[in-house]
Length: 261
Image 1: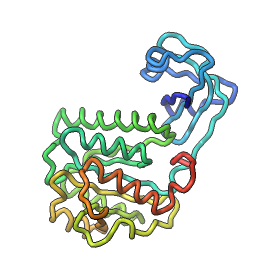
Image 2: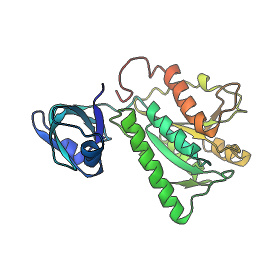
Image 3: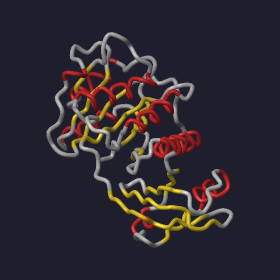
Image 4: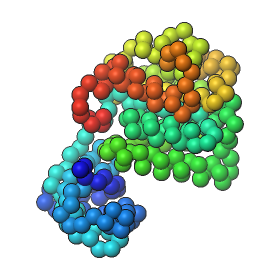
């Protein structure tokens, strides 16, 4: 059985030394001690979301927290290609499913997008709660997939502000791919970026599709459109499917290493 994974702060991770102990408290400590009921001697892994992985075993427990005796501290490199999923807001938690699945598949960043055709709107108090829910989902999916690097969650982008973000990404040498079932080009024909750590943004529209005026704005900003194949996917599956396809076609999943490596 694999060791349980818990999240610690970068400050705690930086202080970890082989042979020493690391505290796990707060919500993570309570979950480890009270929910999973980890006992002294059991294996455990700690990650900080920024590439550090600490391996060890439970040293002591004290009700709502525990300490870990460290056997190894590893700093894992960033992914060779940094994918960002620009996910349109959707009904029925379909957007939550999309970003959590993309996290399990290795996405490096997520940007919530309120497209013109979105039925769901983030406004006022609801915006803050929805954004916090997305953040919790990313952390949960990162732990489930045992990732040491956690996706960065951007702020909500509304309207033509996305075109401005696309223009900046392209100016910085990144690639922006807009998933469009009517695009003449296949996603499989997009060449892999050559620069190490290249940025690749995947833009996924809402259930009603991306408005033609938005597609025109994105193209003018430097984005490329591509289709996934003969079928039209839901907004909850399009992003993860594109991420998986590019990871295979570009050879990013060629080894049985952790995706972060």
